[in-house]
Amino acid sequence: MSSPSHKPLVYIISAPSGSGKSTLVNELLKSVSDLEFSISYTTRAPRGSETNGRQYYFVSRPEFEKMIRHGDFLEYAEVFGNYYGTARRFLEEAEQHGRDLLLDIDVQGAAQIQQKLPNATSIFILPPNRKTLEERLRKRSEDREEVIQRRLITASREIENYDRYNYILVNDRLEDSIEILQAIVRAERLLRLGRPLSSEELKIVALADHCRLSNVGQRLKPILASFGTPAVPGGINPR
Image (cartoon, rainbow, N blue to C red):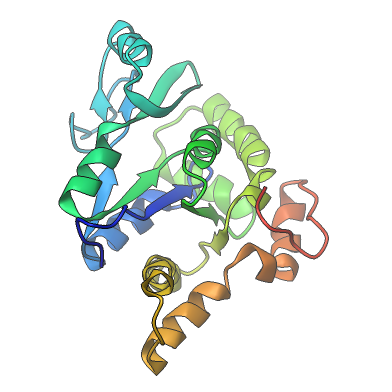
């Protein structure tokens, strides 16, 4: 658990669109205390029941570009013709409140954060294979066919960056994925304590370690192959 005297732990979560990331993040926030969620700013229009300040802060393009000029973003990127960005103030507020910070951002944004905050813990969520991802995108039924195809192409490009992340979580069974994501967040907190861990705490760390990049090589091969992405031999440490 964080305290005001400590720098917040920062968790980066990235995933291709349709991988179930939003569901996992929502479940994580319900079950893990002292974790603040950074709500991204975007210039895209709200979808469905989305409301300002809940899923995103919806702003105009000129307003977003003004924030860029003022240095208000930890990271930002343009995706599918719209800006998305993480405001610097969320990190400052997490530190003031003695809480940790969760960032739900794409691969471009994650790379920027990793440069500025090299100690951040990064987690990449993968679908079990390309076919499952396509099925999930179609079930959402909010996108035209051309948009679905574009998202699949983008997913393949994003997945090429998997080896830049500390942890790889394959979202096959939702209940298992929720448990593993919780374990990763808690394990990083436990490892920061610098004290001997109890048997229960060691189990949490072991569950998280199972998803470390260096430990997932064989499990990833068929998933990466379904997207046409070559696996890094033996797994490597994040760049």
